[in-house]
Length: 138
Image (tube, rainbow, N blue to C red; front, top):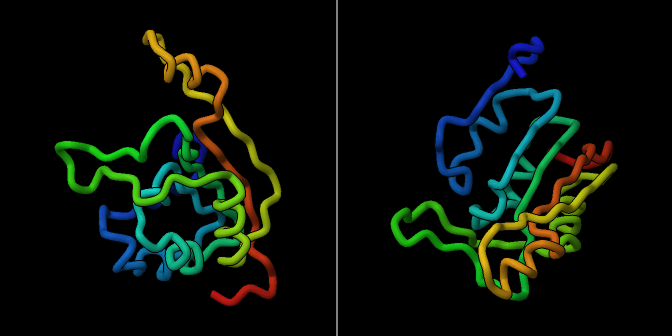
């Protein structure tokens, strides 16, 4: 993105559940969040705190045939939420965002078994483009 003359600002690894300073102190043209909201206890608070009018965000979808992801070695690499698409839509709308576009895709693997077969046609990821609702308070 920087090669195309976009300014890219990242958080510094802070716990966004307890510290939204980076979200409140910058004015972003577009805020992107790829597979972060499932790790947060309170994604609503983060979505409300973002100072941007446009949002592109993706989340892994909840799979009926697989439990929520929990790393055995990394205490932070866990999914507190795995959303169904309607749940993420509702969260965004409640936080003051209007979804303009959305897409789902699968994550097939080359392993053998029932779950790998199901992953070939069951959407695993969901991405949305949303815009801040004009009357929404930040």
